[in-house]
Image 1 (cartoon, rainbow, N blue to C red):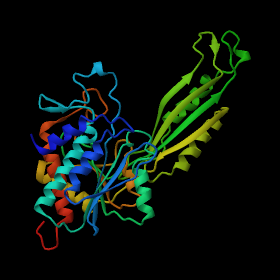
Image 2: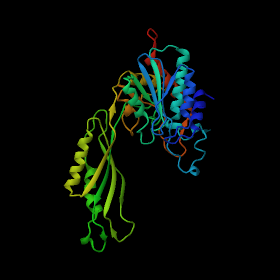
Image 3: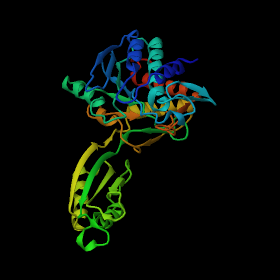
Image 4: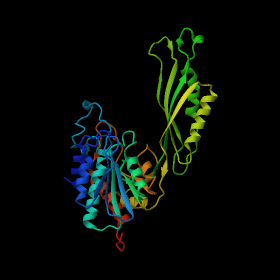
Length: 381
């Protein structure tokens, strides 16, 4: 059994549904402490956060990830226990196998192999692990970033091990993510009997034309790095459950994913202008879940592109698609943040899995990228 597979199995078999860590971070800390890493804990509000660092010189390369996983759902829907790592048909099954315990295992082994062959890299290596990425993300990576910022810490390269690949290992890496702006809207009506609509006011009828305009609005054109802003309704709740009652209010939750060129205040203003134009009586609460970020195609992207090509023969697409990640917090103190990890086709699904054949190449991509970025002076890269 390869070192990566062995460690990935060990992590998968530790149940760690958000915000639980299940002892995963202890496993990583114990393993890397023998390689000269020193650990610090920045736990907050029930979230486990681990900062491991080896060295004090720059450049500082950080691998960031999360040990928490989403709930498995009804166990009877799984073909195997989600917290018992199992191999079959050339795949490794278990909750977190793709998102993202295999990435953590691959990086740990990559660091160990690098240090065995190159005992004095030109710079420092750190790991940042949290158990709050799959949840509200209010006490995880953001807490560590706040603590590091207070002490004036600078990070040169940050690699987030999120699953990014679509069809084959190496086909996609991400150098940014869109922002996320959510709204919780209540449209006020007047409850009444459906047979006497003149005595009531139906909030769903009033919302419908406004919703049609919101859904059909082109918010921006996007740009060279980001697709156009998208508007999506996630929840619509209305009515008492009775078939003869006009509801007194209607609740709608929606989300806008936006590019760096568009400001949240602009989107808020345009949404409220549409609601007001349709004469709605409403209350609206906004939540800015994430600011967009974009890393330049600098040395980190270049090192990953080269290591991916050398290992897999693939030329990765550099993308900003997908949801939010903890890269948005790391970008506050690191100019180069990139996400790269295994296939994302089964993440958050029943029978989550990863191809066994991808584990060693994933480790090798991480190891080679580290080697390229932290090679001592005078060493051929």
